Length: 243
Image (cartoon, rainbow, N blue to C red; front, side):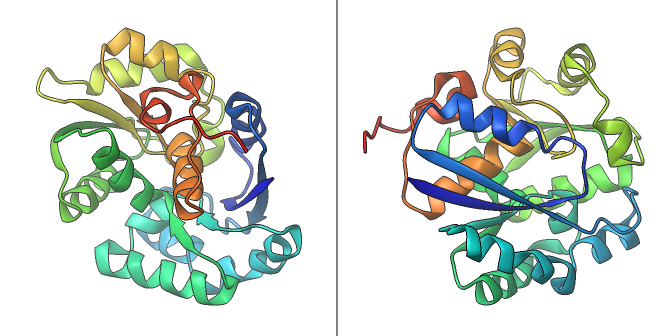
């Protein structure tokens, strides 16, 4: 059994994690601890506070007790808003506090883009345009070329969590570009776990979504590889490992 730990802000799409656990179809356990979201707003000031070291540290002990082997801060906007260097510092602090390998969803996207070999990407964000732009800047700092960005202008994670498949597909279609080799949906408040095959079929290219890459990143930190086609092309790049 490989136990993976996630610090998830508030309550929006955390039910993606038990769904992903089932879709992985392996001896993987996903342990989710909820952090205090503070002000539910896709605003820079609120996001900086949401991802503060104190808020993240508050959930670490529970993950340690669960036997987690790695931990990922499962919040994209609450990590990239700190900038490339600040997000590294956030993860370093988390690793020291948790005593285990750590990362965040923002870094998960950078690593996943490189894993699938996509040189150019489009961003389909639920965020307001200014916050979506900060994500694009983060990706560029990580060596990823962003050819198009679309923001949906949604302020709260609570609203994002109400979106269904058709709204997710519509956002992805709007953001896609012929020049993009993959489309990224960065919000962990967005339900996407069961929509990835439909998204990839619709767009004809790999699609990376926040909760998907977050789980993949936690596996990467433990040197664990799982083949799970139902989780999209990202999870077919790894060899099947039976334990």
